[in-house]
Amino acid sequence: MEYKTFRDNSERLTVQLEKMPALTYRFVAWRLKKKFSLKKSCDLVKTENEIFQEFSTGNMRVSIEWDNWSGLTVVALDKASEPLVMEIGESLENKYI
Image 1 (cartoon, rainbow, N blue to C red):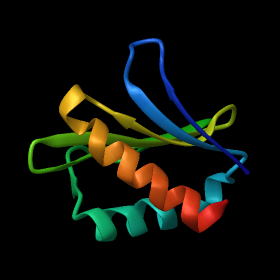
Image 2: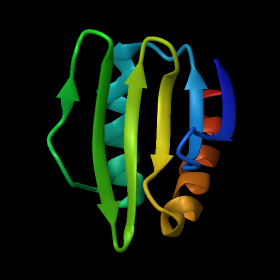
Image 3: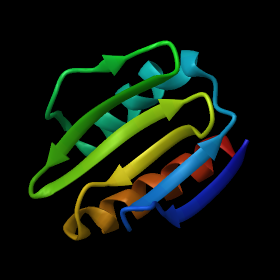
Image 4: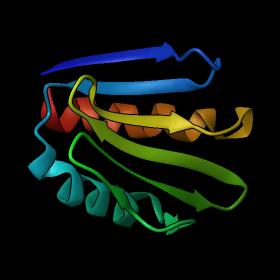
């Protein structure tokens, strides 16, 4: 797996673990929810090619996503959430890279 940090086309800070299998999404999302005290903001969306769900803690909002092309990504949904995404990224990098 390869770890990346970048801004998406909407300029949202994103961390990515390429080539992470879809089967790991629920487990990784569960671990991140526990570790960072995240609360679900919407229902899980799951299709053949993508899975995503939004979470929040305090005033910070993130989306934990998976798709066939990108693997696992965590996206800051606003500027205030960027420190949380960086912290989540460090955790993912330490655990899976």
